[in-house]
Length: 584
Ligand SMILES: [Zn+2]
Image (tube, rainbow, N blue to C red):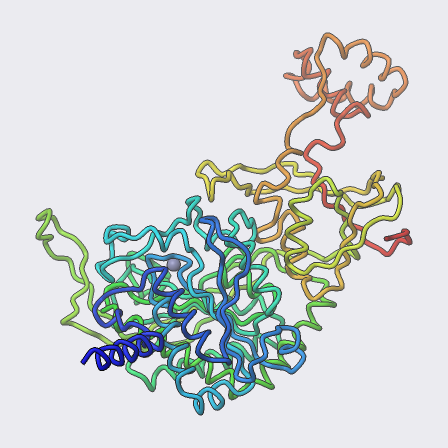
C-alpha cells in the first residue's frame, strides 16, 4: 500500500513537471507573473527546440525574458539570420491590464512544442521569439480595479511600469530599463515580423480582435507593396476562416459619429512599439482585443492571429527575407526622409463593417440620456477605410552628423540601436551646418514625466565648430538611416530634441547687464560702424526700441560677437559633403 502510494506520488510529480499550461483563460483568469515564467521554464527544460534567455533588467529588478522556439535547436541569432530564417518577435503585456497575449503566447508555445511533427512543419524556416511579459512591474501589480472600462479577466496588471512609465511611449526615450533591454532583443534578433498585443475599448462592434498595422507609407516602396497588398490581406483572409474575423483598428474619422464616419489608419510614431520596429523595416502589428468580449475569446483570437502570422511567415519566408533585404538596401542609400505626415482624405477603400446600432437611452445609473450600442441590433455596412498618409515635410540626410561626446545619453542610445559611429582622431575645426531652435513650445501636460517640445521653428547656418578628439561622426550610409535621421534631426517625428535630451542649450549661460555692457557696447559700435547703422535704422522703425535703454543694448548684444553662439544651437551638426578628417 505504502509502495503504491509512493508510485502514485512519483507519477504525480512527473505529471506535474510535464504539466500542461493552466487553461485559466477559460475561467476568466489571466496567469500571474510567476505562473507565466514557471511554465516557460518547464517548456524550455523539456524541449531542446526551446530556450528561455534573460536580457538585462527591468525597472522592477526582474530580468526581461525571451522565449525562443527554433526547430533546428539553433539559438544564435546571427547564425539564424545567415541561414535566412524568418524571425517573428511577439511582445506581450506592455500594458498588463491587456493580458490576452500573455496567455495566448504561452498556449501557442505549448501547442507547437508538444507536437514535434507540427513543430517541424509549422515553423519551417521560421523562428518564433516571445517576450512573455514586458511590463513586469505592471503585471505584478494586480487588481480587479485597474481597468474601469473593463470587466474581465478577474485580476489584471497596471498600465504603468514600476516607475509609472507607459512603456508604449518609451521606445525613443528609453527611460525604462525595460525599453533598454527590449532594444537589445530587437537589435540582436532583427525580426522581419513584430507583434505587440493589446486590448482596446471605445465604440462597440461585433469584432473580438482588431488590428493596427504599422502605417505603411513609412516603408520603402518595395516593402510597402508586399506588406499592404499581400501580407495584410492574407492575414485578414486567414482570420476570416476562423470564428474571429478581423477588422482594422476602429479609429473613427469622427468619434461622435462612430465607425460609420469611416475608419482612419493610426500613425504610429517611433515612441510606439510598432513605430519603432518599422524604422528598421520590420513589418509590425498591434492586435487590439475588444474589451467587451469574453476573455476566453480574446485570448483565443490572439492565439489564432499568432498562428496566422506564423503560417504566413512559413509560406512566404523567402519573399519576406528578400523584400526586407531590398528595403534595407534602399534605406542604406536613402536621402529624402519624411518627418511630417497628414492623412490623405481623398484616398479610401471600402470595408464591410459589422457593427451595432448606436442608440440614445436612459442610463439606469444617472437616469440621464446617454449613448449606447444595442447588441441586439447588429448591422453590416460598407464603410470607408482611410489607409494612406502623405508626407507633408521631408528632409535631406547630410553626408554625416557630428555629435559632441558631451552627450553620452545620445551615444548610448545610438549604440543600443546598432548605429555605427566613428570618432575624431584629433581636435579639429570643422565647417558644419548648425541648427538653431528659434521657436519652440514646451508641452504644458507632461508626457512620461517630460515637457516635450513641439511647434518648432528651426533655422540653419554654416559655422565653424571646434570639435574635439573623441567626438562622434555618424555616416548616413547605414541600415539604421531611418532611425538616425528621425532621432537626430530636431524636426524628426520623435526626435531626441523633442524628447528634451538637449534642453540644456535652451538656457543662457552668459548674458549682459546694462550697467556692465554699456562701455563695451560703445567700443564695439566704434569698431563696427555697420552695426551702428543697423541700430540707427531699427530705432527709426521701432518706437519701443527707441525708448528703451535695455532693448537697445540687447539689440547690440544679439547682433554682436558677444552673443552666445551656443544658445538654442542644437548640438547635432550636419556635415553636408564629404570632408577629409582623420578618424579613429
Ligand atoms: Zn495597450
